[in-house]
Length: 414
Image (cartoon, rainbow, N blue to C red; front, side, top):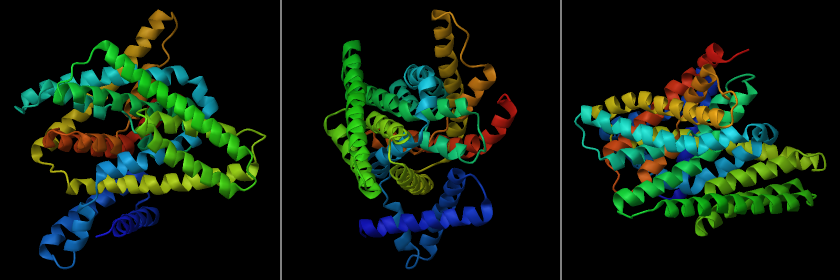
């Protein structure tokens, strides 16, 4: 089996699933691709034993997909760059304060609330998880998936602009905070590293500050070069180079690749919307990265469905995972309300979010492939917690993603 064969298989499955949805199902794309790929995974698994000579090779091919590498090392940088490029930077500037505290303080609150609640839940089910492992689960499940959220919003006509900006903006930035929390907790739990507040602050400054600095440098330099290009094709190549090399270099110099890609995408996207920017170049860039975004999105959600072939999900994982949906939602809601309440008291102003808007923000915080990839990336992380992560992510995509449009119609103010 070659990488080309594997890639061709995944593209074929994604195209087939997309066609079925476009022609017959008419569901939100993220939900349809996940459901169809799960059915394909189950079907190939069942048929591989009864028709080993015909279906067996396909089953082994699909099963060999390295989800962690595909998502964390290959797809994540391009997806975040494309998302940053298409975000309305003017609207994001208006909401930058709540976006930043939701993506930082909100992630910390959600991590610890989820971790402690899971620890007590595991005790009720007589499952032996340590508190440290539960906190790690809290960190990897806390970030909302910008890709899943944007996919959901694409199925909604004229969504409230502020709500869309808050959810998508937070989803772009909170990945970095969650990954940093995960790294710190993993070092403490599995490597028994003693970290002080100073160590954590230093890591935060290097990862976040370095990511912002490198992303800004990359975005400004690429934007400057594109502005001086006469060829839209060359301009597109420059953005491909920026997203590819920028992410790789960020990892090599130990700064946040996530923040690098988001910041670079936002800056280049902001440049492309200015009047002095070549109109044809802007059109070509937008069309190209929208297509890349659609293709990678499709591949990602097909991968999520196929990941069940490599993750053993038993009845216990399903029961705890479905219960965890409630825990994760409560933690998410409190991570929105608590920072907002504290800031309103400190700054002596009204709360930024009403109860209905807070509920929508919490319900719109869909989990995605990043959480599964992070769970698979931790050496020593229990297989049962990986399975629970998978159940929570699937449930989030199908339940929250499937009902968000309905919740929006009920809770959003006219």
